[in-house]
Image (cartoon, rainbow, N blue to C red; front, side, top):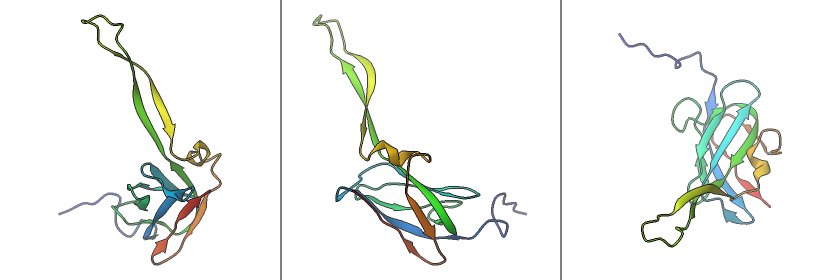
Length: 132
């Protein structure tokens, strides 16, 4: 006997959602996009190097639940800051505070500050975000 928790007829209906995120005409090369329904589990995807995404809610690539969603996109690159050695041959560099580079304005990363929305309908949903 197999038992499956979190699957089956009790889950809300989803539809495939995919698209591309661009900023000032160029693909956003890394980051995360999330679709938040009014109620229920959000859908998420990582951005590919060409800005493409394919949402997942319950199982890989199943899309998002039907209806209106608020959308956030967090696209930033975090790199360590290395403090150079003091010139002593035995000395090695140390790490300072990390450097955060936003690939997209930070306002798109928060539910309170992002103005992005999308509607997911039955069938295939191609939803692009071409941000100025």
